[in-house]
Image 1 (tube, rainbow, N blue to C red):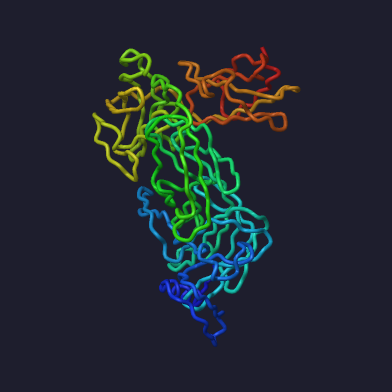
Image 2 (image 1 turned 30 degrees about the vertical axis):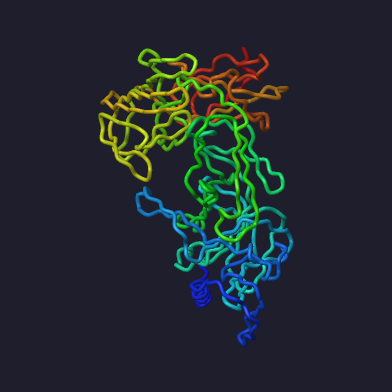
Length: 499
């Protein structure tokens, strides 16, 4: 464990006195560099050096780093998070030229002190998984280099509170960045942008009224700075007003849109370095709520589209469609025999959108909220969901809970492998629950295309109703018979099962 002692204390003292002041030439007998800047330049932490094309502080104003924002867990149950500026943490998005030196330099009055280290390739921990980047423990008067020219997120944490001791204390992270968009438009997945110069573009993005999204680095929503403790993080997403870790961006008018995100080096908050545009280019496809995926997410840890016991069935008999053209009307969906463990957190989910406690009206149970999620249900319930659609968007959503009998359906995680016949260049899987034909591969023949590797394909299903049946095909007429009652770990010789 690395202890920085008086070094960190000195940083802390200097970090407390950031003000704007006029810089005069002076002599320092302590060996610290002395600078002469006649312009007004704010005290603070800068990225400077040949790697950013600026070595003269009189031209370095836009290289001032922003104060870092940490999303911190506030209670032991993992139910409360809060954003706050973190003392001694700094961030900057910028281009770095590979093989050239740069430092993070603290400017305090007429003195500048350089910090860096030997950057090494390291697996960085994002909330969505691990990804490659660069890391170093903090050293004084040490320049850094990245091996490749690119666009990076630079994060410095001085560890003023000692919270990073388990991760070698004060540190610098340099992470490559690829911007995407994530929201209700893609079930909070990831759609990467096309980069041209300093602008990322997304074309023909379809929004329905009121749908939300954010800009997000393809690797996740945040980088953890403290390893497994997960108390200190740097956001890797831009929300409303392009705030670092801000709230969702809402698109009120349905349609097809072109979205742009443009970067320009600037001092100040992260938001000051970005602008975005959203331009309607066409009309959105007509929605049919009778075909929506509706149910509960969060059950069994699945925060995506509901499946298995948490997936609701559309009830055409009880629904009332008032206008066949706009699909205006009242829609009913039913869940039967869903069992909740005490303390389960969940949200309702409709057509890729999460609905929290403030979005619904519930009867039959007393619901509460924890960290934006719904809780307060314990036992087995039938749930009748009634949604009113005005032709463009939902106007109300009611959930009626009644005590029910636990479902007799057995749900399981299943991974199946297929040995691909020689000569096949494509392989698809079609999977369904035998009793009610619930489909788990998109519902449109020939199903989901799988990647062929070493003559095999593999597909993993989460929380699917059993018995599960599958068909493999090449999408061009060759297919297996119905392969029934597929168990976890089953390997199927496709050639031997062709019909």
